[in-house]
Image (tube, rainbow, N blue to C red; front, side, top):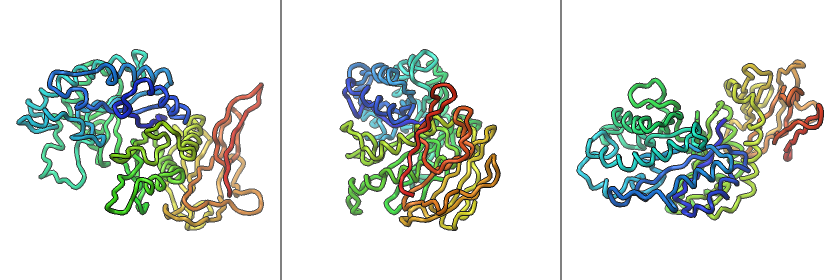
Length: 422
């Protein structure tokens, strides 16, 4: 599984500090970083491209490699990334051509930038000993919020998307090309025609202030909400919303869909880091950092998750009350099953008692085996396991969170569990 964080080197233009960020990301248990390249910052004047000093991608890749972190490169040319014009330089915006289209005049402006950046990325591919495992052409190309096809006629220009992908392939990019769509419409998915990529992913910003919905499916997950003082929503309130409780709810909801590529993005403009585990000051938010660490390390030692088949989430199933939803992930080639337990109403702040009736290798079992019930606290979610493989030792079930396990001396196993109240 690729579990990655978002880190843009141009937002921390001090190369000497990049290793510190990568080490903190690695310490969480993540194994990747996605990053953008801002064209407007390195080619402010046509033909004058700067790729050294604070703009050196080689130093960025070195820090990633030193930390054991994979990289997902997103060079654009359009990146969005909450930057002015999505990183397209001002001098490009002034040309008499349709931007982000196969207009020859526009394509000509991208050549100097793309030709040099793609060569740098090509040398850093994992096939050459570098950290780059995927490259994304363009960004969110195909639809745009509240803009119709009539008002944005070039947004589905397949010739343009094919051209950008070919720019990368012609430079020797052989790692998979990945797409990040704004909506789950299948544009640029494998086999979808001209401009298709190798891996299809989507944006998802599930957290709005009243918690109205969660994503139906997400392979590239974006967490956050843009703070708007006009609505009375401050950055501090947003940070409270996307705290460690939200991490337990929304991340685990994604696991219920069997997500295998999970990239965490931030949200906002001036304060770009609200609610993040590692802020722009490089300080760590202990509660959120710890929760991410718990989940990431569990997935790292749970290879059965990679092949598990998601079942249908049903309220009141497996012996639970109707206020509890259970989503199973069944072992596909393994005996291990996973059960996502959450409130039927995601925003519930009530605590609910429940028991589970599950089939395991020893038969139908009621959990908990002791007198009493399990408790799902408000704004919480749990992931229970059955027939969990500890390197040849079968853990029948666990209602506590598994942080990690390892082989001890001889046949011994060391298992670290984490359990809160209930």
